[in-house]
Image (cartoon, rainbow, N blue to C red; front, side):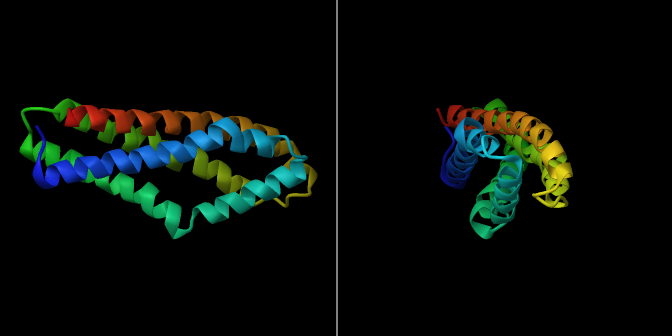
Length: 159
């Protein structure tokens, strides 16, 4: 069984990836649906505001901190190569680092950047809005599932 500081790191991995999964689950199940139901100008303005707010320390500490923690867990697992939980720890790290953090960087952030460049009340923003909602939401589902799967994998490593 995993113990000592390694146990603490794994529990923190469960907590961090689980919290991020919860945020993305909220967006996938009701936030984006609520915003998408608004007139395009209001939806664009709301999402632009959310994207700015997401960059504040509260969320970024959990989101980026979990990525750092997952990387540390992967490195420590490779170095220590424990008798139990190795596959689960490495899988959890890969799921979060690539399925959540990586997807955010290559899929969600570029869409956020494109949205940020638009004036909410313009025809260009109204035309882009349905595509943004659809594509951004799809990738959000992926990163939410990957975060939850990472948390489950870390939990399995502890059992």
